[in-house]
Length: 271
Ligand SMILES: *[C@@H]1O[C@H](CO)[C@@H](O)[C@H](O)[C@H]1NC(C)=O
Ligand SMILES: *[C@@H]1O[C@H](CO)[C@@H](O)[C@H](O)[C@H]1NC(C)=O
Ligand SMILES: *[C@@H]1O[C@H](CO)[C@@H](O)[C@H](O)[C@H]1NC(C)=O
Ligand SMILES: *[C@@H]1O[C@H](CO)[C@@H](O)[C@H](O)[C@H]1NC(C)=O
Image 1 (tube, rainbow, N blue to C red):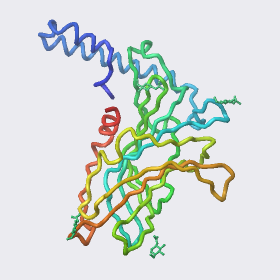
Image 2: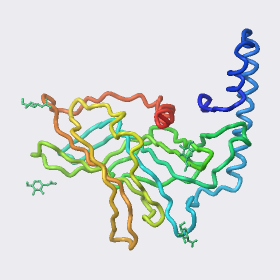
Image 3: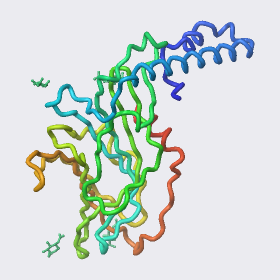
Image 4: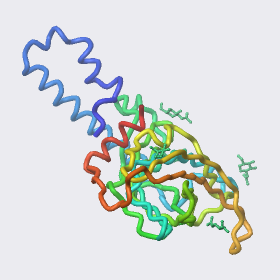
């Protein structure tokens, strides 16, 4: 529950106006108890209202012939392993995505001022954005949840580890690995993936002991595949990597503490 940012709730008004009365601990704890209870009640009501007739298999498009705009950003956390001989790279990252779902709109003033709601990812429509050049398992690191805002904006930040192919020459000083993200089934006519840098790709990056990340570039592309007549949109990140001096092996890797991630994701995203 996101108790910290519920501006305008009775709890907050109570805090502003009744500081003098809060000499007794008892009064404050009763107040907190009552207002947290009221908020839970409001969340329940919104949830029931929003999801009564909601079908998560239906795209939140304006109409059947228009695409759903989805903004996308990659936050690279760590390069877990890069093996030029094997031509593969594994990494941990957050994918930041937002879109609009007009079926999930409510008026905060009708629900105790509540303007945001956290729900499970499996309860709402979610774009099927995947790593195209994957050659290994994509492993979820968190129990995915999405943040709904009262105006219909949906914020989704899954954290995962990925394995991508990276064709490169062993003799090169600088290796270039391209990570290609796009919708697995939806063409650009159904899902319009757009790169949007909410935060720099390397804001949360932990440097590797072995590989120096010299640069990251990003581009949006429209591609045609042999299978299908429609265009597909993809967002490509190109990492430039060179071996650090004195390092010959990539065997040792510190492990991240993923337990904090769910919380961190939502907090960081809102900054
Ligand atoms: C669908 O929406 C688009 C953009 O809002 C509009 O240009 C188009 O005419 C609409 N098509 C139908 C069939 O309503
Ligand atoms: C929806 O509300 C959020 C939070 O107030 C805001 O950041 C966002 O720009 C709004 N989106 C639209 C489309 O109005
Ligand atoms: C590797 O280098 C050779 C010779 O310079 C070149 O022909 C080949 O295209 C390169 N391969 C890749 C994957 O860059
Ligand atoms: C690695 O060593 C070479 C020569 O010893 C030096 O020119 C280069 O700047 C060093 N690179 C890094 C990243 O320290």
